[in-house]
Image (cartoon, rainbow, N blue to C red; front, top):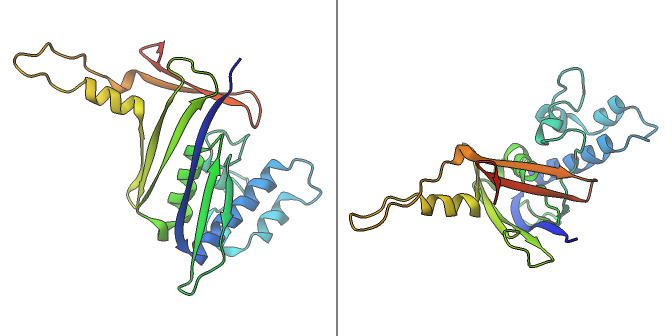
Length: 205
């Protein structure tokens, strides 16, 4: 038995307005996760205010429908990290820190791209580790976020690109890496316990 961790920690500087949208997104995540709330969801949505509604309008009959698009699994609408927002500085900016040991890489990247335009372009890195020294349980990657979109890069992809480079005339040809053969499967056992399986051509790597 071993524990796996997907960790990241970084700070972005952004306008106070964008930082407020991050705070509202945190609150929205809490609302949609709280199935026992006595307050109707439509009232909770209205309480988030017009800026949140403009960024995340209702969709498919659900007030939080477009907000839930940030998450791969809308049944678990958590950013899986701690988000701390600093006080506003003299220039009207805040520092927003994101950190966690079961970090939601995809949903945090989606949040930054959607709500934090003043922080773009930006990037953050993440590490996949294990508390046992088991082979192939370590890796990581980075996310590049610009106005044009989000680019995900992993150590697996980097290794593949290196192994797939062309060989010189006197070299033995190296195997060609085909990214279409890579599959990534998330196995979530609970809100806080999960792992990611990476396979190449059906074989776990």
